[in-house]
Length: 185
Image (cartoon, rainbow, N blue to C red):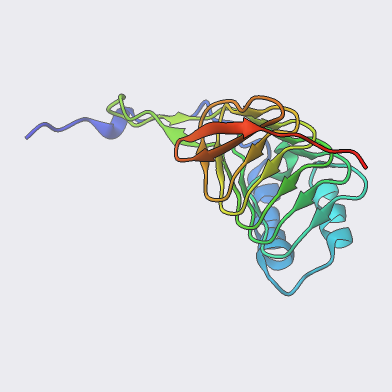
């Protein structure tokens, strides 16, 4: 049997971006005011996010049951919509542009592990959603991905690579299925 010495496992390089006290307080604030379905007030959630260091634009809507790992690593542009049950597992920066829609239970998942390394080291990279991006319900975006302007990731789709601007993607792994045409009135 092949055994590996896991005592070499070390992610001391990882910076959570805040001390233990701030992270602990956020844990309870997140549980009580964000994850809890009894708080429908976007205004209070935006205030709390800003208090903990997030950049939040005007007209942002944050629905109930949203889970945010580290608000100090989050920015949300004007008039974006964070749907019910969205999970932003942002071990690194997550930048959400203006007029974006993260539909119900979408997942922004930054952390991964290097399966080729015997110590299974943590790998992280930021996620960028440019203006006008729409993530369908239960879709997943992984670390290191940029969803370019007005791209769409369809319901239950998964992407671990960049999405082209004005394009619609579907599947796991997500593939481009057509161009997104936005009609003006």
